[in-house]
Amino acid sequence: MASQANKPGAKPPYTFRAFWAILLLAVNIFVGALYSGYVKI
Image 1 (cartoon, helix red, strand yellow):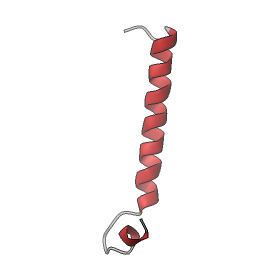
Image 2: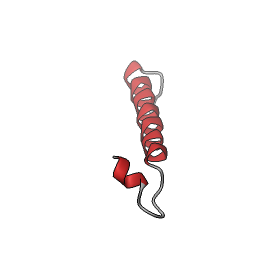
Image 3: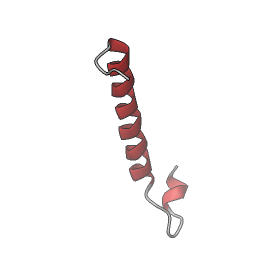
């Protein structure tokens, strides 16, 4: 994990983790809304 931050030109790993955390949270809320019938497709 720490070795990735030492590579030159590499993006900080925490931004990548934050992106995935937000993405998964959004998907989780969307699926929950579909399951509860709040959103109709």
